[in-house]
Amino acid sequence: MKLLSVNLGRARPAPYTDPAVGVTGIDKRPVEGPVRVAAPGAKGVAGSGLAGDTVCDLRHHGGDDQAVYAMAREDLDDWERELGRPLPNGGFGENLTTEGVEVSGALIGERWRIGSSVLLEVTSGRIPCRTFQGHVGEQGWVRRFTLKGAPGAYLRVIEAGEIRAGDPVEVVERPDHDVTVALQFRATTTERELLPRLLAAGSALHPEDARAARTYLEKHGS
Image 1 (cartoon, rainbow, N blue to C red):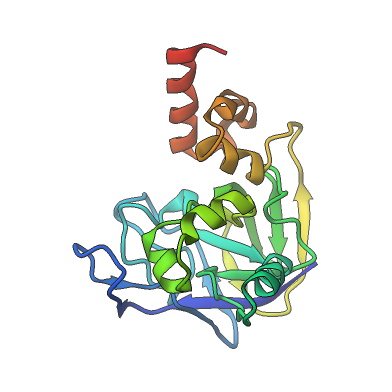
Image 2 (tube, one colour; image 1 turned 180 degrees about the vertical axis):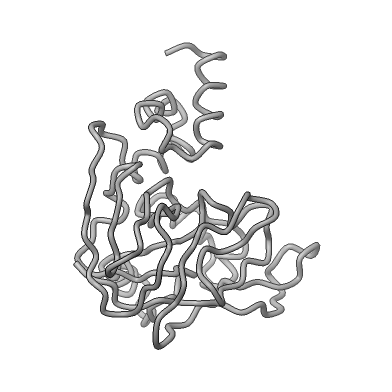
């Protein structure tokens, strides 16, 4: 298991962004050399966990619980075959493109050691949005991506440090529950009745998902 590339984005204007923002950092490109990774701070005021990476819409992206976004190269390859065109590393706006790592199959709370110093913890899957659809340039992309159910994973930074392309990725901790990123994604998109199951992930669960699960329980019961 290894890190194929570290991808950073700069703010660029795009017609498909929210007019209130007007720019996006979704167009991420692989970079050479080490990149500093650290917890950025609270959502709404802080952006990416990677130095040099830009998050433009702080309402929905960035912050400690979405500090890093990872996508498996294997999933990009699958989409290449389906779309009939190449997708470069970073093509889905991911910070980390991995090889040999179960990304959407990772457990919420699973911890990854990347290189010698960085420790990350899986929190949730990526919810597709209008900006993502515009970036990919495919009609009905939000629905199509959702139905595929392989969203990649957001991670929080437990131990800061530097990473670079080629670093090994090691799963150093797997919690004792069955809540995967794929299950969390289905629960928060197409199968809301699964929401109560997410609470088994405990404090590792993204706070927004924990609130949604508790609200569902209050309204519908178990």
